[in-house]
Length: 309
Image (cartoon, rainbow, N blue to C red; front, side, top):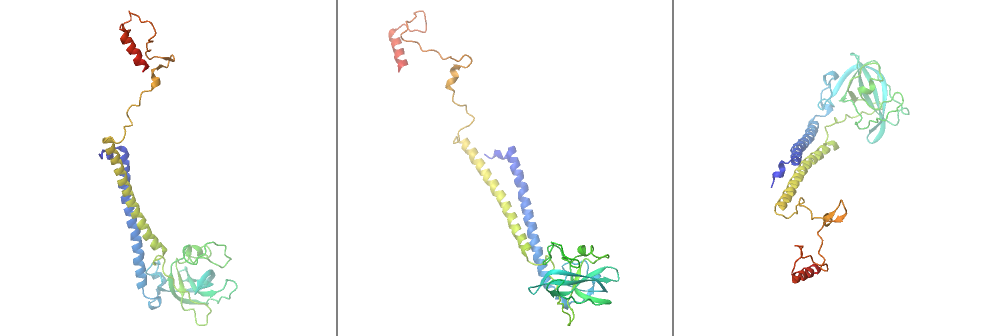
């Protein structure tokens, strides 16, 4: 009954099922692993001590920035050079901007330093001047921003002196020297300064955000796909087996049997005449020499009567 599984058509179906189910299981397991990694990273980030309780280290010892070094206090010594304003940043539900200065170190590279936050719009608010001379800065280390960082406006079109994204890729086109692929936010802005400190942000990918639950949802979808493929294969096999059984029992008419003969087949298609044997006329005189004409009158009458009936 199940010999149809060896036909070329079913070989293709079986091959698809054999490949599709492991693929769906693999993708579901991979998405589940991504969700578990996000949960573990979130737990590890919560167990990290507060930035103020850790000793500061030189900036070069903490690079590159990762989930472990992000938020760690970093120190650098140099001189402030160029200054940029980063608009569209909120603090305590108030809209304002960051004051960003580049600290040129002895190595020649510059470290972006957010000296603080001010309310209002850039150009309409007085910005305190950066300290002159050589200074040593201590701030919480942060990774370079990207288009997905909260507060970043990637639309562009900002006036000179303003910056939408704090990243080395953006700053390297504005200054003639190398820039660290990181930045620090100063927590001690001075008691007399109008600048407010910008708290360090949680490293991206360490929280149970929407992306983490998307991974969990994708896990369920891939496992559902695997079950659906198996269900459809079982349903097709069952339907094919039932059709084969009905055909063996004669419950389904054989479509390959010859059709009923056509009544018009007795006509001579070439001549357009009727090729069927003619019915003898009972009123015609019988030919005694014709062997097809019976001699007995009773037989002839019975033949005529049978024809009329």
